[in-house]
Image (tube, rainbow, N blue to C red):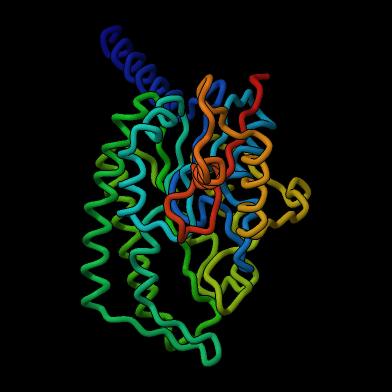
Length: 316
C-alpha cells in the first residue's frame, strides 16, 4: 500500500513538474518576432503600426521584466525561403542567441501570392497544382527554419503562429478552396512545430471565415488592431493562462508609412555618419554611399521598402 502511494505521489510530482515547465515564464523576457508582414505589424492600409508582436511585448511588460523586444527580423512579403535565408545570416544568429521567446510567422506568402483575388466581384482563383507545390516547399523550409532556431537560440521557446482566413469579403461560393489550402498550411505548421518541440499557436478559430471586422479592407489581407489583438491573445493563452489584452489596453493608432520609415532612417544616418579612418579623407561620393549603406542596413533588399524597428527595454 505504501509502495502504491509512493508511486502515485511520484507520478503526481512528475505531472506537476511538467505542468510547471509548460507554464514557465521567461524572466526577464527577451522576445524576438520573426517572419512576414504579420510579425511586422502591417496594417490593411499598407502601413506599419502596432501588430501582434507589439501587443505581446506590451503585455509581457505589464506582467514581468522585459529586457529585449525586436522586430528586426520581420519583413513584409517574406516567404519561408526568405525567412530561412535570413536566419542563416551571422548577424541574425547573434541577435537570436539572446532570445528566450521567439514568434515565427511564415508560410502565408508562399501560398497567397498564388491567389488572384478580385475585391470588386469577390472572386478567388488559384491553381491547385501550384498550391500543392508551394505548400510542400513551405513545409521543408519551415522544418529547416525551426532547426536553425533551435541551434541559434537554444534557450528560447519558439511559438509558430498559425494563419487566419484572409478573404472574409469574398463570395461564399469562392471561399471553400482557399480555406482548405490555408487549413493545410496550418496543419503543416502545427506538425513541424511538434517535431521541433516548438509551440503552435492556432488563430483561425478567433477569426473564422467571415471576420470582416478584423480584416476590413476587401483588397488587403492584413488585419486591423482588433485582429492583431486576437492573435496576441491566442499566443498569451499558450504562454500564460489568464493573461489577456483587454480593449482598454489597446494603444491609439500610430501608423507609419514605408516612406516615412525610410526617411527617418536616412535622417538618422545623416546625423550619425560613419567616421573615416584617422588621417584618411573620404573619397568623392563615399560619404553619400556610406549614408545609403546605413539607411539600408536593416533592409533585406532594396525592393522591401520596409525598415524593421528594434526596441531595447530596460530590465525592470
